[in-house]
Every structure is written in C-alpha cells, then in structure tokens.
Length: 153
Image 1 (cartoon, rainbow, N blue to C red):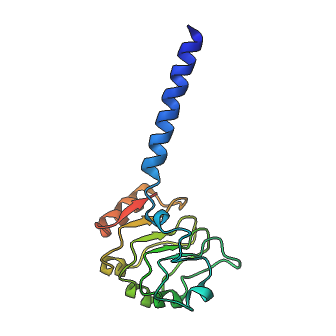
Image 2: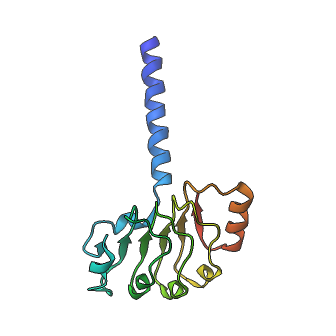
Image 3: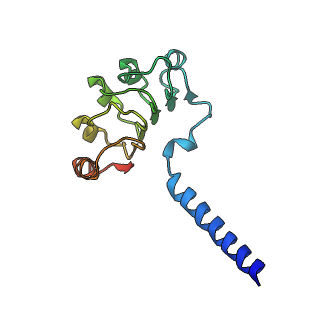
C-alpha cells in the first residue's frame, strides 16, 4: 500500500512539473532558435541582416553594457537574447526593430528601467526579466507602463 501511494505521489509531481515547465517555457524565440535564421554572432549576422530572425548575445565576454546600435540593422529580427550581460541602456535606434516579438533581458542586474519607446514596437509581446532584483511594486508599475507586453519575472 505504501508503494502505491509513493508511485501515485511521484506520478502527480511529475505531471505538475511537466505542466509548469510547459507554461513557463512560452519563450517565443524557441521556435526560431538554431534554425537557418539564427545567429549568436553580431558580426556574422550583419553580413546578411535581412535573413536573421533570432540573435543570441547572451553571456558575452566582455559583458555588454548596452545593446549594440548595429542590432537595429537586423530589420527582420524577431527575437533578441541579451541575457546575463550588464545591459543598462538601449540605443535610440532600437525602436526601429518593428518586427521584434521577444526580448530576453534576464540577468542584467544594472538595468533600472525600460525605455518608453518599447510601447512603439507593435510586435513586442514578451520580455523576460528573470533574476532582476526589482521590487514587486516596480514590476507592477512596469507592467502597467507597457500593457501590451507580457513580462516574465
């Protein structure tokens, strides 16, 4: 009888973990990651700027302190990952990325606020900001400031 309870509890926990993983993994860049329109090198991406849909600049050495202005040349970019750098500012031309749908800013501890022009980006739907030590009040005010964006804290 104890073994049946153990397996039942184990099975339920497995299902709960799977469901939570599926809900939490709605990171929209996953569908493009690693495909022919993917790049993890900005210099290489700029050789064919109209073909790049996903750019992964996470964990750069040296750490990025701002998003490079050249990223705005990638006119069809849908997903940008600059996680785990030291990004604290965005270039003004960033708002020209009208196709950008997903932005990962997780782990950028120096980031204090988001630029208002993100509201001018019609396709931006998801922003990951996991690991930032923003208060609940700051998170809520950010969500209110950008009502069309889904945030992942």
